[in-house]
Image (tube, rainbow, N blue to C red; front, side, top):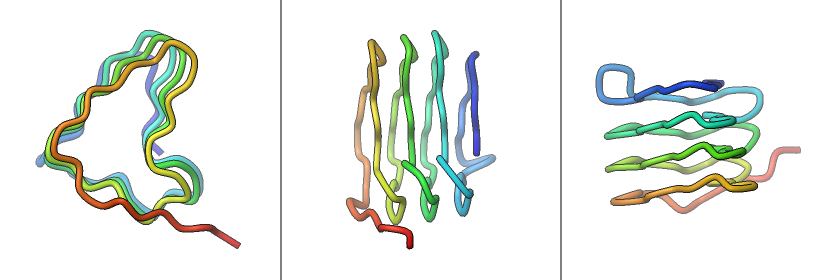
Length: 92
């Protein structure tokens, strides 16, 4: 799981957040997250879990085969462009 309370970028140099026991990427508080040309998949929680006043920007990403896609809570904000995959799965 990628978890942050500051700023991160997930891009082609480190393109995957996959196969985690819980969420794929978690952004908390006032963090700013940019995900570009990456894959967030096969996580046993939501692919992306954004809360507090965090911001998330997705560009050319694949988000699929997670228990949930993108969860946005409280005052968090997202900007989405060219996101592929719309499938989620339920874990037993």
